[in-house]
Length: 381
Ligand code: HEM
Image (cartoon, helix red, strand yellow):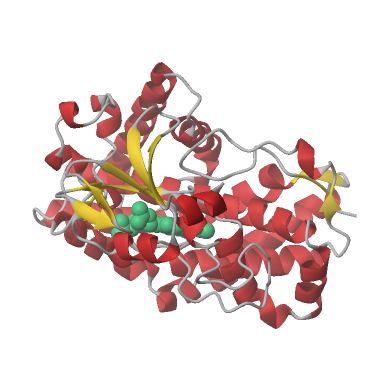
Protein backbone atom coordinates (compact mmCIF):
# COMPACT_ATOMS: atom_id res chain seq x y z
CA UNK A 1 0.00 0.00 0.00
CA UNK A 2 2.83 2.40 0.86
CA UNK A 3 4.47 1.66 -2.50
CA UNK A 4 1.24 2.56 -4.29
CA UNK A 5 0.84 5.74 -2.27
CA UNK A 6 4.46 6.81 -2.83
CA UNK A 7 4.00 6.65 -6.58
CA UNK A 8 0.42 7.87 -6.98
CA UNK A 9 -0.59 9.87 -3.88
CA UNK A 10 2.49 10.71 -1.79
CA UNK A 11 0.62 13.27 0.33
CA UNK A 12 -2.93 12.11 0.83
CA UNK A 13 -5.86 12.78 3.19
CA UNK A 14 -6.71 9.83 5.47
CA UNK A 15 -8.79 8.96 8.53
CA UNK A 16 -6.73 7.27 11.26
CA UNK A 17 -8.02 4.15 13.08
CA UNK A 18 -8.93 6.49 15.95
CA UNK A 19 -11.15 8.46 13.55
CA UNK A 20 -8.94 11.54 13.19
CA UNK A 21 -8.60 13.34 9.83
CA UNK A 22 -4.97 13.71 8.81
CA UNK A 23 -2.56 13.94 5.84
CA UNK A 24 -0.38 10.90 5.24
CA UNK A 25 3.11 11.59 3.84
CA UNK A 26 4.89 8.55 2.40
CA UNK A 27 7.99 9.56 0.35
CA UNK A 28 11.43 9.50 1.97
CA UNK A 29 12.49 13.04 0.98
CA UNK A 30 9.17 14.53 2.14
CA UNK A 31 9.10 12.60 5.44
CA UNK A 32 12.69 13.45 6.34
CA UNK A 33 12.29 17.14 5.46
CA UNK A 34 9.00 17.36 7.39
CA UNK A 35 10.53 15.74 10.49
CA UNK A 36 12.96 18.68 10.69
CA UNK A 37 10.47 21.41 9.71
CA UNK A 38 9.67 23.79 12.61
CA UNK A 39 6.33 24.69 10.99
CA UNK A 40 5.21 21.17 11.84
CA UNK A 41 4.70 21.14 15.58
CA UNK A 42 3.96 18.74 18.42
CA UNK A 43 2.47 20.85 21.20
CA UNK A 44 -1.19 20.60 20.25
CA UNK A 45 -2.33 21.35 23.80
CA UNK A 46 -1.01 24.92 23.43
CA UNK A 47 -1.78 25.51 19.76
CA UNK A 48 -5.02 23.68 19.08
CA UNK A 49 -8.49 24.13 20.51
CA UNK A 50 -10.84 21.13 20.75
CA UNK A 51 -12.72 22.56 17.73
CA UNK A 52 -9.57 22.33 15.62
CA UNK A 53 -9.57 18.58 15.64
CA UNK A 54 -12.00 15.84 16.33
CA UNK A 55 -10.50 14.00 19.26
CA UNK A 56 -11.73 14.30 22.80
CA UNK A 57 -8.79 14.95 25.04
CA UNK A 58 -9.27 13.23 28.35
CA UNK A 59 -7.87 15.45 31.14
CA UNK A 60 -6.63 12.41 33.07
CA UNK A 61 -4.66 11.10 30.12
CA UNK A 62 -3.43 14.60 29.26
CA UNK A 63 -1.90 14.63 32.73
CA UNK A 64 0.72 12.14 31.56
CA UNK A 65 1.16 13.86 28.20
CA UNK A 66 3.35 16.81 29.15
CA UNK A 67 6.55 15.22 27.95
CA UNK A 68 9.21 16.29 25.48
CA UNK A 69 7.80 14.29 22.59
CA UNK A 70 4.59 16.35 22.83
CA UNK A 71 6.33 19.71 23.14
CA UNK A 72 8.15 22.24 20.95
CA UNK A 73 11.09 24.50 21.81
CA UNK A 74 11.78 26.04 24.25
CA UNK A 75 9.93 23.56 26.53
CA UNK A 76 11.15 20.59 24.50
CA UNK A 77 14.76 21.82 24.74
CA UNK A 78 14.48 22.36 28.51
CA UNK A 79 13.08 18.89 29.22
CA UNK A 80 15.38 17.02 26.84
CA UNK A 81 18.44 18.74 28.35
CA UNK A 82 17.55 17.32 31.78
CA UNK A 83 17.96 13.71 30.67
CA UNK A 84 20.18 13.80 27.62
CA UNK A 85 23.35 13.05 29.62
CA UNK A 86 21.94 9.72 30.81
CA UNK A 87 21.67 8.52 27.19
CA UNK A 88 24.96 9.56 25.55
CA UNK A 89 26.76 6.72 23.72
CA UNK A 90 29.58 6.77 26.31
CA UNK A 91 27.25 6.64 29.32
CA UNK A 92 25.19 3.92 27.68
CA UNK A 93 28.31 1.88 26.85
CA UNK A 94 28.93 1.53 30.59
CA UNK A 95 25.68 -0.46 30.80
CA UNK A 96 27.03 -3.22 28.53
CA UNK A 97 28.08 -5.64 31.34
CA UNK A 98 24.76 -5.29 33.16
CA UNK A 99 22.66 -5.67 29.98
CA UNK A 100 24.73 -8.76 29.06
CA UNK A 101 24.12 -10.24 32.54
CA UNK A 102 20.36 -9.68 32.37
CA UNK A 103 20.30 -11.17 28.86
CA UNK A 104 22.38 -14.18 29.97
CA UNK A 105 20.09 -14.87 32.94
CA UNK A 106 16.99 -14.80 30.74
CA UNK A 107 18.62 -17.13 28.21
CA UNK A 108 19.61 -19.53 31.03
CA UNK A 109 16.01 -19.65 32.21
CA UNK A 110 14.80 -20.29 28.68
CA UNK A 111 17.38 -23.04 28.15
CA UNK A 112 16.21 -24.78 31.33
CA UNK A 113 12.54 -24.52 30.30
CA UNK A 114 10.37 -26.07 27.58
CA UNK A 115 11.66 -26.38 24.02
CA UNK A 116 8.87 -24.10 22.78
CA UNK A 117 8.23 -20.68 24.26
CA UNK A 118 6.81 -17.23 23.56
CA UNK A 119 9.90 -15.15 22.84
CA UNK A 120 8.14 -11.95 23.91
CA UNK A 121 7.09 -13.25 27.33
CA UNK A 122 10.34 -15.10 28.01
CA UNK A 123 12.87 -12.68 26.54
CA UNK A 124 11.94 -9.49 24.66
CA UNK A 125 9.63 -8.02 27.31
CA UNK A 126 11.61 -8.84 30.50
CA UNK A 127 14.90 -7.73 28.92
CA UNK A 128 13.65 -4.39 27.61
CA UNK A 129 11.65 -3.51 30.72
CA UNK A 130 14.43 -4.53 33.14
CA UNK A 131 17.03 -2.38 31.39
CA UNK A 132 14.94 0.79 31.33
CA UNK A 133 13.61 0.26 34.88
CA UNK A 134 17.08 -0.22 36.32
CA UNK A 135 18.37 2.85 34.52
CA UNK A 136 15.50 4.97 35.78
CA UNK A 137 15.18 3.50 39.26
CA UNK A 138 11.73 1.96 38.85
CA UNK A 139 11.18 -1.35 40.73
CA UNK A 140 11.40 -4.12 38.12
CA UNK A 141 9.06 -6.24 40.26
CA UNK A 142 6.13 -4.05 39.13
CA UNK A 143 6.72 -4.82 35.47
CA UNK A 144 3.51 -6.83 34.96
CA UNK A 145 1.47 -3.74 35.75
CA UNK A 146 3.43 -1.57 33.26
CA UNK A 147 2.81 -4.10 30.56
CA UNK A 148 -0.92 -4.02 31.18
CA UNK A 149 -1.13 -0.24 31.41
CA UNK A 150 1.01 0.52 28.41
CA UNK A 151 -0.69 -2.26 26.41
CA UNK A 152 -4.06 -0.63 27.10
CA UNK A 153 -2.88 2.92 26.45
CA UNK A 154 -1.27 2.04 23.11
CA UNK A 155 -4.11 -0.13 21.86
CA UNK A 156 -6.50 1.32 19.31
CA UNK A 157 -9.16 -1.27 20.22
CA UNK A 158 -9.69 -0.69 23.95
CA UNK A 159 -12.53 1.47 25.24
CA UNK A 160 -12.02 5.05 26.43
CA UNK A 161 -12.83 3.89 29.95
CA UNK A 162 -10.11 1.23 29.84
CA UNK A 163 -7.55 3.77 28.62
CA UNK A 164 -8.66 6.21 31.29
CA UNK A 165 -8.31 3.76 34.14
CA UNK A 166 -4.86 2.66 32.89
CA UNK A 167 -3.77 6.32 32.83
CA UNK A 168 -5.16 6.87 36.33
CA UNK A 169 -3.38 3.77 37.68
CA UNK A 170 -0.09 4.72 36.07
CA UNK A 171 -0.35 8.28 37.34
CA UNK A 172 -1.03 7.08 40.89
CA UNK A 173 1.88 4.65 40.68
CA UNK A 174 4.38 7.31 39.57
CA UNK A 175 3.11 9.82 42.15
CA UNK A 176 3.66 7.27 44.90
CA UNK A 177 7.11 6.30 43.59
CA UNK A 178 8.23 9.94 43.37
CA UNK A 179 7.12 10.54 46.98
CA UNK A 180 9.03 7.46 48.12
CA UNK A 181 12.20 8.39 46.27
CA UNK A 182 12.02 11.97 47.56
CA UNK A 183 12.28 10.51 51.06
CA UNK A 184 15.09 8.12 50.16
CA UNK A 185 17.07 9.26 47.06
CA UNK A 186 19.17 6.69 45.20
CA UNK A 187 21.76 6.74 42.41
CA UNK A 188 19.31 6.68 39.53
CA UNK A 189 17.67 8.88 36.91
CA UNK A 190 14.46 9.32 38.90
CA UNK A 191 16.34 10.71 41.92
CA UNK A 192 18.30 13.05 39.62
CA UNK A 193 15.05 14.31 38.09
CA UNK A 194 13.48 14.82 41.52
CA UNK A 195 16.55 16.81 42.56
CA UNK A 196 16.20 18.94 39.39
CA UNK A 197 12.51 19.43 40.16
CA UNK A 198 13.13 20.47 43.74
CA UNK A 199 16.14 22.70 43.15
CA UNK A 200 14.51 25.17 40.79
CA UNK A 201 11.70 25.81 38.41
CA UNK A 202 13.07 23.77 35.53
CA UNK A 203 10.59 20.91 35.85
CA UNK A 204 7.00 20.91 37.08
CA UNK A 205 5.56 17.95 38.99
CA UNK A 206 3.41 16.96 36.00
CA UNK A 207 6.36 17.22 33.66
CA UNK A 208 8.29 14.93 35.99
CA UNK A 209 5.50 12.32 35.97
CA UNK A 210 5.10 12.65 32.19
CA UNK A 211 8.85 12.20 31.73
CA UNK A 212 8.72 8.94 33.72
CA UNK A 213 5.79 7.80 31.63
CA UNK A 214 7.52 8.65 28.33
CA UNK A 215 10.85 7.06 29.22
CA UNK A 216 9.27 3.90 30.57
CA UNK A 217 6.85 3.39 27.68
CA UNK A 218 9.16 4.62 24.86
CA UNK A 219 12.02 2.70 26.43
CA UNK A 220 10.43 -0.73 26.55
CA UNK A 221 7.62 -0.91 23.97
CA UNK A 222 9.93 -0.02 21.09
CA UNK A 223 12.73 -2.26 22.24
CA UNK A 224 10.57 -5.33 22.75
CA UNK A 225 9.09 -4.87 19.29
CA UNK A 226 12.53 -4.44 17.74
CA UNK A 227 13.63 -7.72 19.32
CA UNK A 228 10.46 -9.66 18.46
CA UNK A 229 9.95 -8.13 15.00
CA UNK A 230 13.66 -8.44 14.28
CA UNK A 231 13.79 -12.11 15.26
CA UNK A 232 10.73 -12.78 13.09
CA UNK A 233 12.37 -11.00 10.13
CA UNK A 234 15.56 -13.05 10.57
CA UNK A 235 13.76 -16.39 11.01
CA UNK A 236 11.79 -15.77 7.83
CA UNK A 237 14.96 -14.82 5.89
CA UNK A 238 17.19 -17.87 6.51
CA UNK A 239 19.99 -16.73 4.18
CA UNK A 240 20.37 -13.43 6.04
CA UNK A 241 20.15 -15.25 9.38
CA UNK A 242 22.92 -17.63 8.30
CA UNK A 243 25.05 -14.72 7.11
CA UNK A 244 24.67 -13.00 10.49
CA UNK A 245 25.39 -16.18 12.44
CA UNK A 246 28.56 -16.75 10.43
CA UNK A 247 29.77 -13.17 10.79
CA UNK A 248 28.78 -11.54 14.09
CA UNK A 249 30.68 -8.37 13.09
CA UNK A 250 27.56 -7.69 11.04
CA UNK A 251 25.51 -7.25 14.26
CA UNK A 252 25.60 -3.41 14.34
CA UNK A 253 24.53 -3.11 10.70
CA UNK A 254 21.94 -5.89 11.18
CA UNK A 255 20.32 -3.96 14.06
CA UNK A 256 20.25 -0.84 11.92
CA UNK A 257 18.73 -2.79 9.02
CA UNK A 258 16.07 -4.29 11.30
CA UNK A 259 15.19 -0.77 12.47
CA UNK A 260 14.74 0.17 8.82
CA UNK A 261 13.08 -2.98 7.53
CA UNK A 262 10.98 -4.16 10.50
CA UNK A 263 10.05 -0.76 11.97
CA UNK A 264 9.23 -1.50 15.63
CA UNK A 265 7.48 1.76 16.26
CA UNK A 266 4.44 3.21 14.60
CA UNK A 267 4.07 3.23 10.85
CA UNK A 268 3.83 7.00 11.08
CA UNK A 269 4.53 9.72 13.60
CA UNK A 270 2.25 12.73 13.85
CA UNK A 271 2.70 16.50 13.74
CA UNK A 272 0.33 19.37 13.03
CA UNK A 273 0.76 22.44 10.84
CA UNK A 274 1.24 25.83 12.53
CA UNK A 275 0.68 27.55 9.15
CA UNK A 276 -0.06 26.37 5.60
CA UNK A 277 2.83 24.10 4.55
CA UNK A 278 3.57 22.70 1.09
CA UNK A 279 4.76 19.10 1.18
CA UNK A 280 5.58 17.27 -2.05
CA UNK A 281 3.65 19.91 -4.02
CA UNK A 282 0.50 19.63 -1.87
CA UNK A 283 -0.57 22.59 0.24
CA UNK A 284 -1.65 21.47 3.72
CA UNK A 285 -3.68 24.19 5.47
CA UNK A 286 -2.87 25.43 8.98
CA UNK A 287 -3.94 23.37 12.01
CA UNK A 288 -4.15 20.04 10.21
CA UNK A 289 -2.69 16.75 11.43
CA UNK A 290 0.13 15.30 9.37
CA UNK A 291 1.22 11.65 9.66
CA UNK A 292 4.84 11.18 8.61
CA UNK A 293 5.10 7.57 7.51
CA UNK A 294 8.61 6.64 8.61
CA UNK A 295 7.93 2.97 7.79
CA UNK A 296 7.19 3.96 4.20
CA UNK A 297 10.15 6.36 3.97
CA UNK A 298 12.43 3.53 5.09
CA UNK A 299 11.21 1.37 2.21
CA UNK A 300 11.39 4.11 -0.43
CA UNK A 301 13.43 2.76 -3.38
CA UNK A 302 14.50 6.31 -4.27
CA UNK A 303 16.65 6.22 -1.11
CA UNK A 304 17.35 2.51 -0.48
CA UNK A 305 18.14 0.18 -3.34
CA UNK A 306 16.01 -2.98 -3.27
CA UNK A 307 14.23 -1.39 -0.32
CA UNK A 308 11.87 -4.32 0.34
CA UNK A 309 14.79 -6.74 0.71
CA UNK A 310 16.27 -7.50 4.14
CA UNK A 311 20.05 -7.13 3.86
CA UNK A 312 21.92 -7.31 7.17
CA UNK A 313 25.06 -5.82 5.61
CA UNK A 314 23.35 -2.87 3.93
CA UNK A 315 24.38 0.77 4.34
CA UNK A 316 21.27 2.12 6.07
CA UNK A 317 22.56 5.62 6.72
CA UNK A 318 19.82 8.20 6.71
CA UNK A 319 17.04 5.76 7.74
CA UNK A 320 14.34 7.42 9.81
CA UNK A 321 13.57 4.52 12.17
CA UNK A 322 14.68 6.74 15.06
CA UNK A 323 13.08 9.84 13.54
CA UNK A 324 15.06 12.93 12.53
CA UNK A 325 15.46 16.52 13.74
CA UNK A 326 14.99 17.76 17.30
CA UNK A 327 12.86 14.79 18.41
CA UNK A 328 15.42 12.26 17.12
CA UNK A 329 15.17 9.28 19.48
CA UNK A 330 16.84 10.06 22.78
CA UNK A 331 17.25 6.35 23.50
CA UNK A 332 18.93 5.46 20.16
CA UNK A 333 22.36 4.63 21.68
CA UNK A 334 20.67 2.41 24.29
CA UNK A 335 18.46 0.72 21.69
CA UNK A 336 21.47 0.01 19.45
CA UNK A 337 23.53 -1.48 22.29
CA UNK A 338 20.64 -3.51 23.67
CA UNK A 339 19.76 -4.74 20.19
CA UNK A 340 23.32 -5.90 19.49
CA UNK A 341 23.53 -7.75 22.80
CA UNK A 342 20.06 -9.28 22.53
CA UNK A 343 20.35 -10.54 18.94
CA UNK A 344 23.99 -11.58 19.37
CA UNK A 345 23.50 -13.61 22.56
CA UNK A 346 20.15 -15.11 21.55
CA UNK A 347 21.42 -16.38 18.20
CA UNK A 348 24.62 -17.84 19.60
CA UNK A 349 22.82 -19.52 22.52
CA UNK A 350 20.14 -21.16 20.35
CA UNK A 351 21.68 -22.21 17.00
CA UNK A 352 18.47 -24.02 16.01
CA UNK A 353 16.03 -21.24 16.86
CA UNK A 354 12.96 -21.50 14.62
CA UNK A 355 9.35 -20.30 14.40
CA UNK A 356 7.03 -22.73 16.20
CA UNK A 357 3.92 -21.73 14.20
CA UNK A 358 3.29 -20.76 10.57
CA UNK A 359 4.09 -17.07 9.99
CA UNK A 360 0.56 -16.52 8.69
CA UNK A 361 -0.93 -17.38 12.10
CA UNK A 362 0.94 -14.58 13.93
CA UNK A 363 -1.16 -11.67 15.15
CA UNK A 364 -0.12 -8.00 15.30
CA UNK A 365 -1.26 -5.73 18.12
CA UNK A 366 -4.13 -3.38 17.26
CA UNK A 367 -2.24 -0.09 17.58
CA UNK A 368 -1.33 2.83 15.38
CA UNK A 369 1.51 3.63 17.78
CA UNK A 370 3.51 0.43 17.94
CA UNK A 371 4.15 -2.20 15.30
CA UNK A 372 4.30 -5.23 17.50
CA UNK A 373 3.41 -8.91 17.60
CA UNK A 374 1.00 -10.21 20.24
CA UNK A 375 3.11 -13.33 20.81
CA UNK A 376 6.06 -14.95 19.02
CA UNK A 377 6.07 -18.72 19.59
CA UNK A 378 9.53 -20.12 18.86
CA UNK A 379 11.24 -23.51 19.09
CA UNK A 380 14.54 -23.17 20.91
CA UNK A 381 16.01 -26.58 20.08
C1 HEM B 1 11.76 9.50 20.21
C2 HEM B 1 12.05 5.29 17.85
C3 HEM B 1 14.00 3.16 21.73
C4 HEM B 1 13.24 7.18 24.24
C5 HEM B 1 11.72 8.55 19.22
C6 HEM B 1 11.29 8.80 17.87
C7 HEM B 1 11.36 7.62 17.21
C8 HEM B 1 11.85 6.62 18.14
C9 HEM B 1 10.98 7.36 15.76
C10 HEM B 1 10.86 10.15 17.27
C11 HEM B 1 9.37 10.29 17.25
C12 HEM B 1 8.93 11.57 16.58
O1 HEM B 1 9.75 12.36 16.05
O2 HEM B 1 7.72 11.81 16.58
C13 HEM B 1 12.60 4.37 18.70
C14 HEM B 1 12.89 3.00 18.35
C15 HEM B 1 13.45 2.40 19.46
C16 HEM B 1 13.50 3.39 20.48
C17 HEM B 1 12.60 2.38 17.01
C18 HEM B 1 13.95 1.01 19.71
C19 HEM B 1 14.09 0.09 18.90
C20 HEM B 1 14.00 4.07 22.75
C21 HEM B 1 14.53 3.83 24.06
C22 HEM B 1 14.32 4.95 24.77
C23 HEM B 1 13.65 5.92 23.90
C24 HEM B 1 15.21 2.54 24.54
C25 HEM B 1 14.74 5.09 26.19
C26 HEM B 1 14.35 5.89 27.03
C27 HEM B 1 12.76 8.15 23.36
C28 HEM B 1 12.42 9.49 23.75
C29 HEM B 1 11.98 10.17 22.59
C30 HEM B 1 12.08 9.20 21.52
C31 HEM B 1 12.50 10.07 25.14
C32 HEM B 1 11.50 11.61 22.49
C33 HEM B 1 12.65 12.49 22.11
C34 HEM B 1 12.26 13.93 21.92
O3 HEM B 1 11.08 14.27 21.84
O4 HEM B 1 13.18 14.76 21.87
N1 HEM B 1 12.06 7.21 19.36
N2 HEM B 1 12.95 4.56 19.99
N3 HEM B 1 13.48 5.35 22.68
N4 HEM B 1 12.57 8.00 22.00
FE1 HEM B 1 12.87 6.32 20.99
